[in-house]
Image (cartoon, rainbow, N blue to C red; front, side):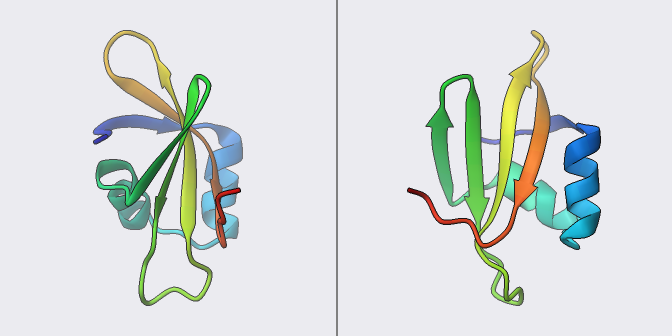
Amino acid sequence: MCITRWALTPHAASRLLERRISLEELTLILQGPEEVIPQGPKYILTRTFPRRKDNKIAAVVMEKGEHGLWLVITIMVNFVAR
């Protein structure tokens, strides 16, 4: 999965700032996730960043519309799949 067209919800934008995740890091998660976990119509994309202490970072996304636009719903740190 490689997401190139995406937008943030206000909630996701708030979490991005709160958790000090850069747009570059988010782009890396969306374009090259280490793991993709399907959750019905949503997906959890994860990636580890060696220099961060709050790994694994996850973005919850959902496809929106017909033109390949994805909506980033939230962003999590210290993610552990259950």
